[in-house]
Amino acid sequence: MTDPARTPVIIGVGQVEDRTADPFAALDPVALMADALRAADADGGGGWLGALDSLAVVDQLSFRALNPVVDALAAMLGTAPAHRFQTAMPMGDSPVLLLNQAANRIGAGESAVAAVVGGEALRTAARRAAAGAGGGEADHNAMRTRHRGRAPDYRQRYGLTAPVDVYPLYENATRAAWGQTLADAQGESGRIWSLFSEVAADNPNAWLRTPRSPAEIVTPSADNRPIAFPYTKLMVANSSVNQGAGFIVTSLERARARRMMAEDRMVFVGHGAAAHEPDDVLARDGYTASAGMRVSLERTLAGNGLTVEDLDWAELYSCFPCVPKMARRVIGWPEDRAASVVGGLTFGGGPIGNYMSHAVAAMVERLRGGGGHGLLFGNGGFATHNHAIILSRAPLPGTGFPRTFDVQARADALRGPVPPVDEDYAGPGTIETYTVLYDRTGAPSAGAIVARNPAGARFLARVPPEDAATIAWLTDGRSEPVGSAGTGRRGEGGLLVWHPES
Image 1 (cartoon, rainbow, N blue to C red):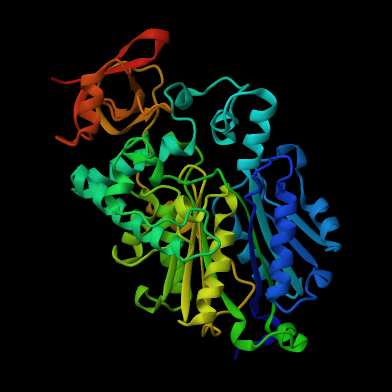
Image 2: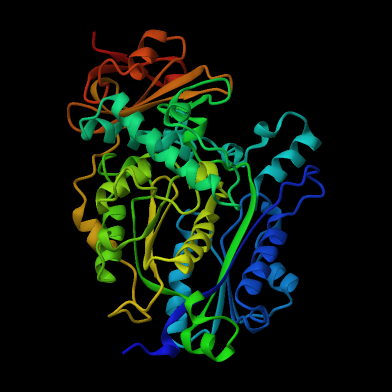
């Protein structure tokens, strides 16, 4: 029988956005977080912030000088929680992790009222930097500039620096592994993203609310420039937003005792599961699947006694198309069914590590309106961190807290052998995966090749932008580059240059 004192429920959710034109009058991340939690408090009937004994914050990237922000946020809210925590980095799975941890603390009797929140003001930060240093907003994108001042490592020397450079490696590898043509794969991405845009159009908290057709999304144009093959601007996370979101978790017993809201507005937290890939992108066993993703999703459903048919809603993290495409195959989620309650990170908005707080808020609102179960799946880093959890309108039979959510050992057992990386190699090889990177004019800046040598070792090579024939071969879809042979030869700066086998 469910123990109300140890049953975690979400009683309040809040989302805010700031479109203030003057960047020096716009809200910083701490103010966005405070407004989001005030909205969550009001949503829960009020009076919860003063009772907080746990405050967990998703690390923010846009105003690094403010970090750590958790104490300043507590002071701004006029609360003094004993447990204060801020994640070490702004990862896409962070809100799901913090929700799972809050549920465990409540289940263990260690916390009575817990809040989770995050906020980003990257749009404001970039505009302030541009006003002070010159240039445009895009010249001060923190996602691209954060590695400056450090010597680039092996991967970065070949242009694989930011997540937007790395996720296409999975996109191109999975396309080949699934037997899709480029048109097939882009068609699937376009259809999924078009459904996201329709969800965002109906979501008052979404950043972009114009529905887009599949063709508009995948076709490069003046307003939809190519970013990293095969992704266009409308296929990647939109980090140029000012958004905050948070939620409040307490026990069913305490929520009932407060009598601040009807019980059918309380949403129950189910069990979650988390597993991760190696931090080093080149130390992965491959790029056609993620064992951490698979195990996190499968164990979350099994741990709550659910199948995909039991799900009324799902939020499958959507920084780039390869993530929801892989995730939907793991659980059997249909392509023609929207895999978001927010609108995805392109249209709903991509506030770095805090998108899933918006997904929690939106899922709570959906479940209050009908349906029984919702799946939340967050992904962070470079396809590295995976964490899933279930929300439900009613207690799930067999669930109990605290409960471990670490399923790393299961994921590790599924992985194949990891090839060694040979940074000094030059010679023949076979393409394992690849991408082409573009500048802001839409012109190719370089191709990046991940290849295997005849001994099975992994190595990198580049395609210079002036090699128009090879760039075209990598991107025109007439043949599949993955699996093809070529040779890496030392070129300018000592980097390997890829020469396809004719």
